[in-house]
Amino acid sequence: MLANNSGRSLPVRRRSSAVFVDIGGVLIRDPQPIVCDKIRRIVGPLPHGFPKLYAQLSRRLDLGSIHLHSAYESICAALGTTIGYRRFEVIVTSASLTAYPGVLKALDRLSKKGIPRVYLASNTSREVWRGLNAKYHLGDRYKRQILSYRVACLKPQVRFFRLMLEKAKCSPQNALFLDNSRRNVVGARKLGIRSILVQRPSQAALLLRRLAQGT
Image 1 (tube, rainbow, N blue to C red):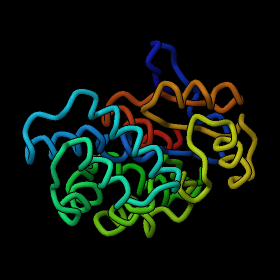
Image 2 (tube, rainbow, N blue to C red):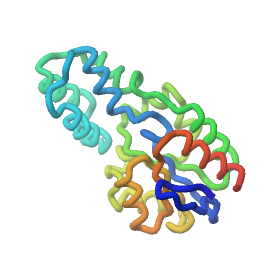
Image 3 (cartoon, rainbow, N blue to C red):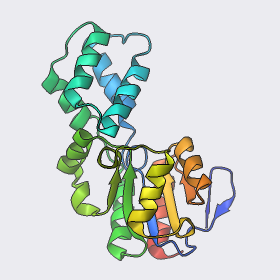
């Protein structure tokens, strides 16, 4: 049993046949603030509303509706200067991607156990996914993935959660979902998926270790 953010214990072992794990904010640090900070270090103070603009562009990238170069052009227009596309690409696809080693280690252990099956379920762009593979080999480590750019929808859309269940061939009651977004957790719970709001990496690592131990 593990306490959730409301202090109540959660029956994490209740016949979960599939565990769905978010990437940004659970396996790795949330990259959006890191990207904005690295751009600020290059150009100085950012325009008002820049983080919101970058979040909007990130959502479009995660949907696969724009390419990274289009996002770069929009960012340069907002900044009123250029930072170099290659430099921007490195920031987004490598320099801003920082894993939580303890969480990866715990998820590796659970994945090797085989039951419950591990799925990555993430709002992630094609470019960031390539970067994660180059840096942490996530595609090799975790063979099952539901990624927004592939399915053309985002959490917390109902379609995303239904695709998770369809891919895993499991009922909501037999699924466990870990995410650092309250909106995503609430959305999954509305479909009956047992969901835990991850607020810190130590919480995620502890939960994954307990799942691997069967406790």
